[in-house]
Structure formats: structure tokens, C-alpha cells
Image (cartoon, rainbow, N blue to C red):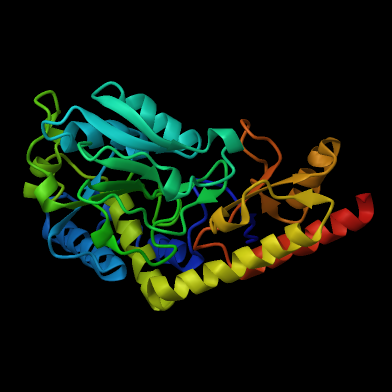
Length: 360
């Protein structure tokens, strides 16, 4: 069996040991005589899996006791609606910081439920930077302030935590959760689709401070009401059981690597290999401001776009796939999430040097 180096932005690569364990347990989970896919979500076997996954996430992120952890469905796109439905709490407006395509989607959906104020935008830079907080214009009466902590398309990431005072900070961390240390207590709510760093698609994690829930809009469906889900341990409706199981395996793997702090060091080292090459080359270029470069998603362009096709073909021939940039920005994009080994980044860097030497 030959495994490729998968640079997909998501669904993304999973750690090989996790895939092997899931395969070994596919037909018979730990002597139960059945697959996790077949288990009742109310049965003792699955309940143990569910509780362990939550405990591991709490441990890895040092989630304070006054925060609820929810395992939901609907992806980050769903949370674009769930957040205002649950967090307006009688207020009529919310502040959003616009740093790219995913921020725009959040803003568009939130406008259906409240007045959205753009507290800051990176539009003038063509979304190649995070607006410094000195540029932000926050409303102290806003229900919350929303950011996208890492823009997968533009490759822009917050490397600092905004100060929003008494107004809760909400962050979409779909593409960088568990990749580096974060002080959860600085946030009112964190949400993340699992399919980048945590597990397969279908699972969305919400970490929310418990005083912020319980005042959902009357129109909120029960399955989207954080309080009702929290009161039912994320089992108001059938949760994405298999995705939660695999996420638990990923978190076990992450803990075995030394936890989030160790993974952050690993991720910084991987990203440095690629950015150092980009900075030293006139053949390739990185559009993102250095201080805001993502550790997870590295967009880059070739000096001659006519060579893009040849570059991608050569990469695939060497077992490196999904390097084509998003259609909205073009070029290339290497997504180097937790499960991407350093060997994959080294292979890409070696290939890029060879390609430059042949075409410069």
C-alpha cells in the first residue's frame, strides 16, 4: 500500500495510526461484537466513547469547568446561524471582523438574524493580513464579536487573542483547533468543524461559556439550541457517533505526541520549512503578511502561472496531491495540518526546489 502526502484543505489527512485502529475495530469494537457505526447512541458502549472524547478535548485544551462542550452537526456553516440564534440574548447587533472568504460567509448568514457591524476588515489588503486591533471599532453594546481564527483560503491566521472587553469573543477555529495552545477562557464561544485537525467530516465541536446559553431566539430549532443540547449531553438528537469515535482516536494520538504544546512546536517547524523556501525564492511568492501567515494553510504562487499545470502534475507523480489553490485566489495551497508529517513538507520543499531549477 502506498500512502500519498495529502495537502487537502479538508476533509484532510488523518494520522495513519488512527486509521489503522479504526480499521482494526471496524467489525468488533473491543469485544462488543459490533461496529461503532452500529451502536445505539444510548448504549453503554457508545456512551463511554462519547464521554471519553469530551474528557480528552477538555484535557487537551484545558477547557474551564464553566464551559460546555457540545458535539453537533451542520459544520461551521451551520454555526453561522446557530451563533446568533443563541448568543444575541435580547441584543440586536453583533460585531464581525472580516478577514476573508469564511468571515464573509459568517457575516452573510448572521445578517438574517441581527444587525451586523463590520468592526474591521482586511479588504483593502486583498485579505492578506489580520487588521491590527488598533483599527477595530467595537461596539460595547454588541452581543458578541466574531472572528475567523484561520482563513483556509487566504492563509491568514490570528497569532494573538483580541481583547473585546466585556463583550464575548466568538471564534471559528475549524482549521486551527488543536494545532496550537489557546486560552479558552478568553473566548465566549469557540466552534470548529472536525475535518481539518480533529477527525472526519460530519462532526462540529462547540465550546461555550455556560452563562451565554439559555436565551435562544424563539425561532431556534431544538436541535440548534445550545442549552437544550447541553442539558442532554449533545444527545437531544442522534449525534454523529462514528465521527465522534474517530475524533476521540485522534485526540488519543495527539496526547501521545505530547499534547497541544508539542504539536504547536511541530507545526511551527513544518511551516518554517515551507515559508523559508518561499522567502528565499524569486520563482515562488507568498501573498500573506509575514506576521499573519497561517501555520495550517500556506498559499503560494509561481512567478509564471502558465507553469501551474506542470507543477501540479509533477507533484502528483511524486505522491503529493491536493496542492491546487482555491478557485477564488488561484495558485497553490499546501494545507499542513497536525496529521501532515514533516516528511511530507520536506518532500514538497525538495520538489519545489527541483521544479524551480528546471524552469527558472
